[in-house]
Length: 325
Image (cartoon, rainbow, N blue to C red):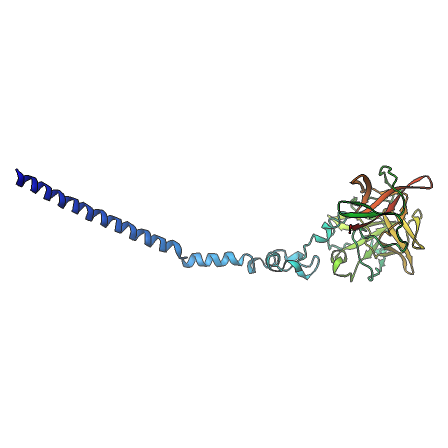
């Protein structure tokens, strides 16, 4: 009996050893397969490496010029639409950048259709002046402010006259006047061409555009027609409308019409930026009331006007806006 028990124990030990050997072998095979699979996943095949190379090139050579027809829209800095944005963003000029800063000069293209060429006159531009797309720069006044500025939100708003609120009422200057953004399919035969050329780097967008002028209104080609835009500062036109308002500032007479200031020059009338303290009776369509703290200003483009009363009449004064010190 004892011998039989010893035989069973011996046989059981052999069976356990045999099973352990089988289990260890299976585990070793599985580990080897896992290692081989990891090595295959950790290295790129030639096809994968080539695909990766092509993917890297998607940001450089593959789309070096995604818009060949428009690469000269503003300047030569739009060659690399993607790689330029990543590696040299400062030198990249967005084709719409000039228009973005000018809400009133949208859809201005390089297309220069000569309409009614028999009646077209090329008008020179004073290139010593900074071209401002929507008359947003306010020229300094030689007379010092005697009133303290209104300070709010980190900015100081200067004016010569006391604040007197009256609502903004857009004004139309007659049948030939059109507000900024107005679209026409064709121009009148009295329209002339005003080209802005050789402007400085800050006005490349304006330099690339061609303007048409007709009786106090400036147009730019867009969408197969013409859109009314703000007058480019520095443009010289031969005449201003007869109902332009004389505005004397800094002992100089400006002429105001349709939201644009003109100054008499030897070649005609030069478009100038508004001068601080200039007082006008009317503001054009396209402006809006802007609440600044407890004061409501009228804003045309980026120029602020303060409502005032002068000689019992509702008027608007050009405001100087500076960062508060």
